[in-house]
Amino acid sequence: MKNGMFKSLRVLIGFIIVALLFYKIGFSEVYEVLLTVPISFLIILFLFVFLDMLIAAINLKVLLRPLVNSLKFRVLFSSYIYSWILSFLVPGKLGESSLVYFLRDKVSPKKTTTVFLLDKLITLSILGIFSVIGFLIFFGVLNSLLLLIILILLIALFFVVLSSWRIRKFIRKFILRKYSIFFKGFHSTFFNYLKTKKRHISLNMFITIFKLLLNASIFYLFFNFFFNQSINFFFIFFITSIGILTSIVPITSNGVGVREFFVLLLYAKLNVDLTLVLSVYSLIILANYVMLGLMLIILSPKLKKRFINKIY
Image (cartoon, rainbow, N blue to C red; front, side, top):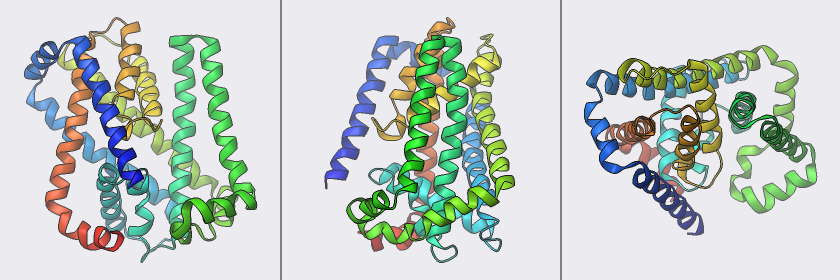
């Protein structure tokens, strides 16, 4: 019940931030821009949302392959889509991490948990590197150094928690509780993977960078090709990385509002028309929720059978 209220509060905060941004920049101005967006860009945007999910699943497949070579990509991708849907609907990070549950019949939970958290750690590290560079460009050395220290401390804290059996025991008993079964044997599997699967980790890093470049390309297309705004691609890339990193901060649901606030602040430093910036981010949010609706219509019977009935 408390988790549900917290989730609702985060959604509300995100909605309020977005509403304030629209109010500040102008509802009518954004609406006028949206009316001029070409159909071709909307088609590209929906393809991008699907491709983004596909690449995320490929990245997980890369890490899972040395642990479970027999897992078919079709099974992994469908399970990833189910977890992606639940990330919008279920409190906290339970929805996203439900991938462990969906693959439990095909892959040992400790292996899926290892891969899931390692993938998140790699993504955080790469986002952190590019965000630190972005902060150096937009906010100067001191702010860049501060962000670097915060990220190093967060990653160090992660490894301290993993290395301490007392902390792991406390987490299993008081935080994970009935879900602790999914983390059984995780500690040894995780550190063994780091030592012996460096090639797969490197490939995952490469794909993660490619995924970030793809994200930045959507904005580059929107600004430079559809609205004739001459913006350097690498500025867009660093702003996109910072935007994704800030969306991880658990203030709002999926970072909606917080991400838009930061990217608007950064694009303002480049003297970019903020109406265009808010418009493209609005379209991305809309595209994700339209895709969510389509997935729910197509997959809701299977989703209910595979997860919701058993959890609730």
